[in-house]
Amino acid sequence: MSKFSKFMKANKAVKENEKYAATSSLRDEAGKPLLWEIRHISSKENEDIRESCMMEVQVTGKPGVYRQKFKTNEYIRKLVTESVAYPDLYDAELQDSYGVKTPEDLLMAMVDDPGEYSEFVAYVQRFQGFDVSFSDKVDEAKN
Image (cartoon, rainbow, N blue to C red; front, top):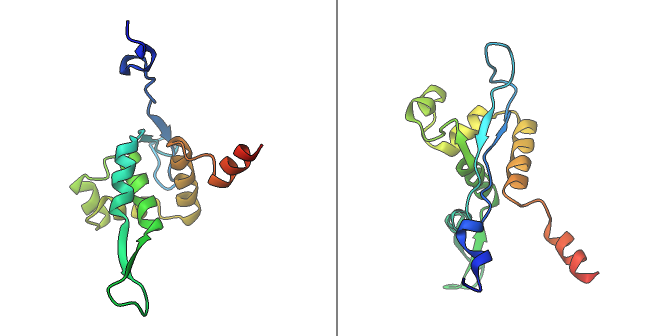
């Protein structure tokens, strides 16, 4: 038996998908909001999303000097989009029905109420493990 047997993949808990009513404007025949299925993304997927939202911007007054800028809103849209397992935001027919061409634009068209969108984003962030702020972690480390 390996000294790392407890760390083997077979012992790793799998985070189950959850259902969430992302918007009240999409309802079933009984008038209940449709449930979306949210999946857990991996740390690697999150890192890829973060990297895709970085851009180089020139430092004012310093030719040839650049700094990285993080596009927060784009990151949030991509994080939520990649977290949605159902409905399939990549489905061309669904995108066409809303007149959009990207999964992120489809998300924004389907959940077009700003308050609902904000609540949905907060839910997805909690689901993905972003429920403790950095300042909370700092405060905890100080104690």
